[in-house]
Length: 160
Image (cartoon, rainbow, N blue to C red; front, top):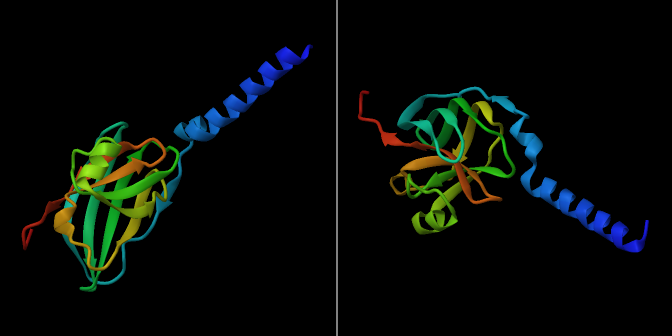
C-alpha cells in the first residue's frame, strides 16, 4: 500500500473515532435505570407536570417538592426517555425551548447531569431559586443543544 491510501485510511479512522465520540450511538440502545427513594420528611408538592416529546420521546411525571419546609427537590417518577450524550436536567425559562437560541433567550437553571434515562430520581433545587421564573423542566442534550423532552410545571392549588 502506498503512502497516499494509508493516509486516507488514517484520516477515515480518525474521523470515525471523532464521530463516535460526539454522537455515542451505542447510548441509544443502552438504558440506565435509577430508583432513588422519595425524599424523607414531610413533602409538599408545589408544582407538577408530565413529560412530553420534543426531539425524542419522553414520559413520566416531574414534581417540585418542598421537603421539611426548607429544601426543594425536583423529583422525576415513572420517567423514561432515550439515552444520549451529555444529558442534563434544566429548569427552563420558556416551556417551548427547542434549541440553544431559545435556551439563551428564555434562560435556564442546570440541576446537573441526568442520573438515568429511566426510573425515579431526585435533584436538589438551589435555595432561593424563584420557581416563577422556570415554568418547565427539560432533559437537555448539552452537546447538541437539543431538548429531548419537557414537562410544563403547573402550580398546584392549596388542598389539591
